[in-house]
Length: 454
Figure 1: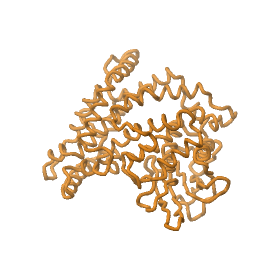
Figure 2: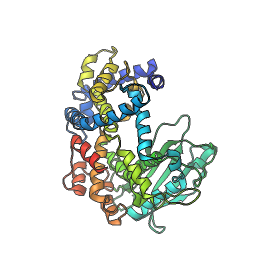
Figure 3: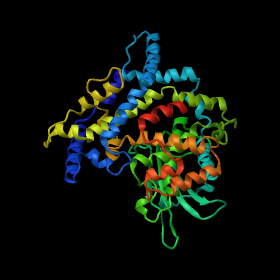
């Protein structure tokens, strides 16, 4: 495990130099624009008040999760000791032992579970959400020859139209590009055309692509009935579908304010809300059926999924926390001052190691280099904490709007009008007040609340 982990930590000199150049260039551009650092510039349009406030909240998350973190690490130490390897836990042990403990405790087999999640079933799950929550029809349709960007393998793409119910007006187009290719990145949602409503009331049809890196045994075709994905991949699909719904259902006067073009520390909220449906049996039972026998997924299995999800909540949360804090430090004044105004090399590995030691009390590599390959340091620089904000707000929205009846049309209508339709045309704090009344805006508070309610 250690050898594999350390091999995965290796970074090319080019990547190291690119990261260092980014830190220098961002700091210089922020100062030209009148900001103390790039982190200050990035957060200036966000809900968080300042980088210092974000770091303070992250530190309090660590403090509040310490008792639970210690319990979870004790479980891992005991499991490792039973293997005859002593009590010391290293970062390369975490994924392995957390997975094994979850399997033992919850009795779930990922491959067996995937048999309830054929791609056809999963697409039906998306259609059920569109229908029940928003009164819309999400319909698979034929893709034109010139629409495909995959040439002869266009059967790997799916095109869906979002329409007002019962064959009504077209209100959105969504492409599914779900399978891995050599040059393809991770899961993401891309806007092709943003919506806007003209003064005459005419709608520019929003178009969006959901891209995922799922594996496929047959590279040239995709059978919706027999192509299976894992439950965690379905959760990812729901996350991206949350973004796509935000894009397709927003109704703003200007394209620049449509969908997920708002502050980054809010736009992850709709994706995390829809992601939560992956753990509700009231929803899953409507489509998650065995691809051969037709047997419906049981409530007991879904209960085990929820238990597995929260089993290492503290460690999972801290993995996001240390990345978010590293992001703030590399984009903020401390790293900028260590660089001065020269192109001299910054010891970012020492910064990363220091943060990780402070947050996760396990053995670490001498020179962490994951930061040189972390995609979010490009388009989420200075705002990676947004994922924690998204989780926090989504938990509150779920409890307030969907927990009692996740498929209620009234709940869906409330969510559509207050959260999705305004896009970025309304201040997100006011938007959250519309749907929640008095939203919790402190990550440290939400870290514990979320753990209690999962």
